[in-house]
Length: 444
Image (cartoon, rainbow, N blue to C red):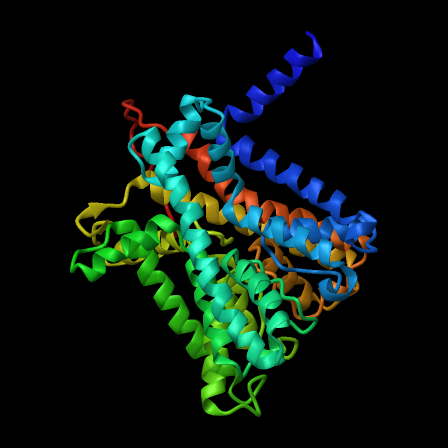
């Protein structure tokens, strides 16, 4: 086999399934990003630090072992922003766009999964959905950039600095990346409601898929939301309110001490928005209380919503498990809006959650075994990396080379693993006409 045919064979192998496309393209982009950031024009970084930064950007995590305002040149910061944008849009969408623009037909299996992802009936609708993603992203980031430029200009008393920080922060917030052109993240701006609320709503909208956001227009017309949008909407609102209330109550005389009541509420809302996936912080998190720590771990595992830029097991998986538990306890049918939740959906949700938790325990165990850092900080770090959140309570700067590599792998797995598992299960779980006798199992 000549080299050309061999390359074509490799290409066909990768593009034959969405899980391979997702894994391979993310892997290659991480390596490419690391190699570019390692160049002198981008800054003076060691290759491990360059790779760590690139993976964190592509996986829209936000954990950083460098100070991007000091260690990266303007060119390096632009490259970082491009990596964030690419990772936020999702390689799956970009790969599909490339297929369409090159005039190539997607494999039947890939096209089937693309239709499932975009809730489309045809290839034309897939194409329309993909352009919706880019249009939705562009407009929201543009609006966010304008508002954040205003907010940063007021705080910095400099329009050019405000513009630079506004554009960077808008893209970073919408992509749920958590990178900011400030060594202290957003702590210096925790009394600026324009910055806090604009950033928080960009995070929320970025963590929800464009298709679901568009369906919210039905509410304005007095129509009912479809089951998926209803679950995402209700779960997001519930988590936001619960997170705000818990953080405000637990940290009222803690990390929020010294602020006025209104600023305490604003920062509680902001941390509730960012803790599930985005990684921004407007207060010092190194001294949070035990209840806040526990809430952060749980919320980081839940993550954002399907089709958005967020990580975690996703709100729909979390809701399906909760709804199933509730209906099982009270002997009710597993129904939402006159639609049954299929058994295979429940099976996939449970499987994904268990696999996710296994990776979380493995990552935590490896960090605890290899790092001389308090265990609580390492467990928090593992949850943050796997959930592509980016929050830290002090462990990231203390990681040695082994610890950095563990976090790099964890961020990569956290970004590609949930979608990869779902695509894989979609291709494997099939209906069967064979009937078997029930297995009599005792659960007590």
